[in-house]
Amino acid sequence: MTAILTRPLAALGAAVLAALASVGRVALFALSAFRHIITPPFYGREFLHSLMTVGYLSLPVVGLTAIFTGGALALQIYAGGSRFSAEQVVPQIVALGVVRELGPVMVGLMMAARVTSSIAAEIATMKVTEQIDALVTLSTDPMKYLTAPRVFAGLVTVPLLVAVGDTIGVFGGWFVSTQSLGFNPATYLKNTVDFLEASDIISSLVKGAAFGVIATLMGCYFGMNSGRGAQGVGRATKSSVVAAAVLILAANFLLTQAFFST
Amino acid sequence: MISLENVHKAFGSKEILRGVDLNVARGESCVIIGGSGTGKSVTLKCILGLITPDQGTIKVGGEDITATGDRDAFLARFGMLFQGAALFDSLPVWQNVAFRLLRGSLKRPKAEAREIAIEKLRRVGLGPDVADLFPAELSGGMQKRVGLARAIAADPEIIFFDEPTTGLDPIMAGVINELIREIVVEMGATAVTITHDMTSVRAIADKVAMLHRGKIRWFGPVAEMDSADDPYLKQFITGSAEGPIETLR
Image (cartoon, rainbow over all chains, first blue to last red):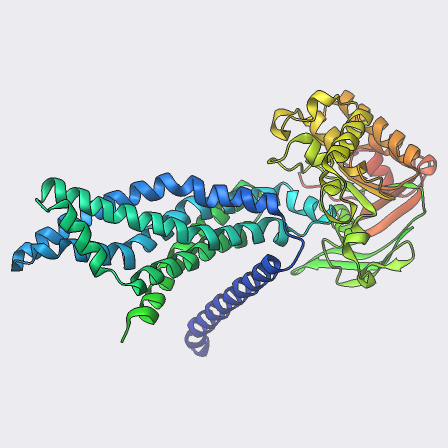
């Protein structure tokens, strides 16, 4: 009888302890990554390569996502606003929605899909094929050689990608509004620029930096801790994307609350 | 040169090493044999510090490996050929070979590092045309040779070979065995090889250690291996299904 009552509690306790242990491991991994970013030796070539793969090569997907999102948002706000004769607020709401929320979140999720998965799969394959062990025997710390350049590239490039995404998203709204909703192009742009405040742009870039770190860190963490074989690589990749997406959305909520709650 | 005393290692409840004692003299080639899962790779990884033993002492050149302050300098004494070669896919062959020479304490100018890499590739029978290829463009045998060239690139004092002939055809296996023997003798290096391949053992070894159930079951010169009366060793070298070593059928 007692066992029936205690077993679920024991299972719950074990799950909570396992979750806390995971949080601890990720936190220690993140601290180690940051320590390696700021202490020599620095692997410049690896960093430049990461800048390309994390940043530059993500531009097409970020641009496409942003332009369609901005366009759809303009249509939605126009349709919704027309219910109470507020169609004229489209430029302001598109700007606010894209810069504060949709821009960084969409870029963050695209990073989780494109960058986290590729980092996790690459590092997990390196682990499974003993390339990580080979690095160690060649006197090279894998945290310094693999993790630090990728996380630093995420920190530096994702805010820039968010800036590009925000601009293209606003342009998407402008294009749809001026082409099919009858807005004047110059007035639309003036309303957008006048309405946006510095804090909106700063919050967007800070979110981008946070999401860049989360996306790259999760890819590295799950890759480095991958299990054996093809299944291990698959599981590491899946877990990294899920963890990155959830953490990005959670961080977005916390950052929005920190920036805008009064 | 390398000594292990009462080394234990368990992963969870699974005991892999249960008190390994082993001594490898300077310039000697020791081959560790044993079935799959007996702890051969774990033993090598413990010596390199890739895995920390739960108990016991490991000394390299008389120095306890846990007390070595400069890990970079410690690892610079080793070269290792991995089972699957473990070449870095993203780097061309010459940069794989010269990896240690392009960064860290042994860093050389790029042109010099490339020259050394090409010389080491030549030593393992590969031409300079291979230098700019990527590992994925090479056959299994060529990858092993590149792995061997990388292992010897910085002229290490100690070289480890993890299953050097696994996955190769018998002729290529013979070529790799011969190369390993020649290189070890020529460099005067201390070598530790782990393998199941008895042809490799006879080609490479000065001394043979048989690992069974996490302990050294037999240790002696290769010349005495065939006349030894240990039933476990006999079963292993004859490849018999009948004997004291349990087999799953």
